[in-house]
Length: 269
Image (cartoon, rainbow, N blue to C red; front, side):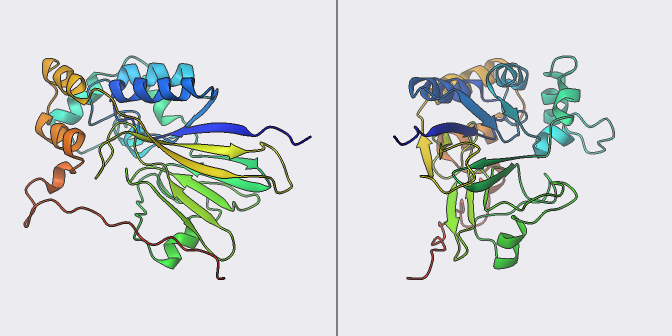
């Protein structure tokens, strides 16, 4: 008899949007998925970083460091603004240390494939790799680095950071995917997460799948709460949550720039 497949939910980039996180967790629960891995960026942009951290510590089996998690509570951070100070002050005692102590990456076996998860790239949480990367950037995502450590190199890599979900495969069966964002999705502002399905810890090939799930939520309730709390940069938050338009592009020449998806690399016929 074939073994039943395991399912793992991957969430990323909640960014203080508790309303979106609760909707996604409800969908995960409704599907009967018990294992949740978080790829980072719990805080910043949204108003409830403290509550997001509390809930993720309760619900997520794996929690990984994001770029916001690293620099927002950094005691040596030199850049500051009204919004940065507000988001930092919203954290509870000890949460900044918890964020900065999170692991950089997480590796495991699934259906004969070594999976590696991290936030942004194989070298740093502050180095961004977008969907329109070149071949060298693609291959670099599978390399061992001082940040990831030694060991077998992965054949599947999942990451977040860009808020821009995609899936890509090359001729060597290397698979790269981006989970998109739960709390701050771009282009389509509907929260998105990933379900990995396969046989955990299996060294031999077995069925394997990657599924992207969009979960609608009450965006107006989230924005109303941010306004009541007096969160800075509210206009940028409105632009991103209502329209999926990055706050830095609101006044860009020619209007917002929407990103076209690349054609996935597929094995030759």
